[in-house]
Length: 316
Ligand code: BDR
Ligand code: CA
Image 1 (spheres, helix red, strand yellow):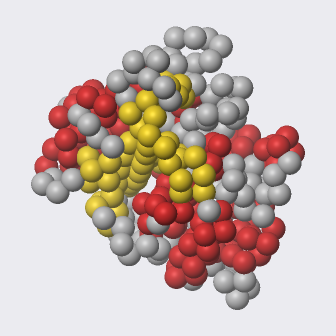
Image 2 (spheres, rainbow, N blue to C red; image 1 turned 180 degrees about the vertical axis):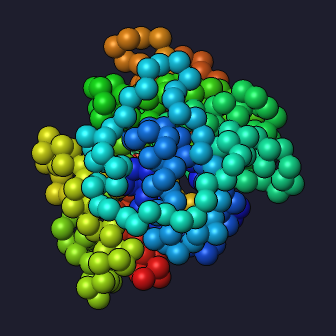
């Protein structure tokens, strides 16, 4: 499956990248980075560290947009740590960043390809929206977009909004609108589902068991990063560990049967100060929205952790 991953690593982005690297059925054509959990310099640097951890320094990383389209930048260093990777330190990465801007890579590579490409988005949608504004016809080259974003129930930044959509709601709306216009299938995996993908102590121990005590082993590194992740959600929501949001996107690509979905009309609220970034779902067609999405509604969490653990074992 030819794949581009747009991301803002970020602890759960890092786990998603490792899951993708461990999965030979995914042909990762490029990784674009965006400002989100931390600054663009840090997300790009983290993508390099994670590719090296996964022993894939051959992958191409294209740094993208440093700030959202309209609203003021926000970051989530309080969630992911100042370095974006839970305070776990990595050697200074050696692999280069590509000189091409992430938006240019998205636009040019999609303009050039003949076979359609799958796009996985794990962060704010600034890069993807900007590429679609520059050259909307690239949407015709998208097999589908699978994204982590939104909440049907409560958000995690405001009561209404989830981080990726809250951070750049205008970009999210551009992506959903353009996808609708060009009939690109969009799968949205919201918080309601990722909050069921909890890395419990037993699941983290299963990762540690893969490492034979080697602290540089990817599975061990993941377990250590997860020790420092999602602490606020655990406290406030009574979770037994951090939720692994972004790896759900890669798991969906690998084993869609792990998820239940429903087709709904959807858009993003961009005007209200109170609910900006809200994923608006219209099940009964009352709002006459143009965008139809496949919304994930449930996950087989044991199956998901089985897949993740087996895959990370391949990287050791
Ligand atoms: C999303 O926000 C980020 O903090 C995570 O990486 C994930 O993409 C969850 O709301
Ligand atoms: Ca992310």
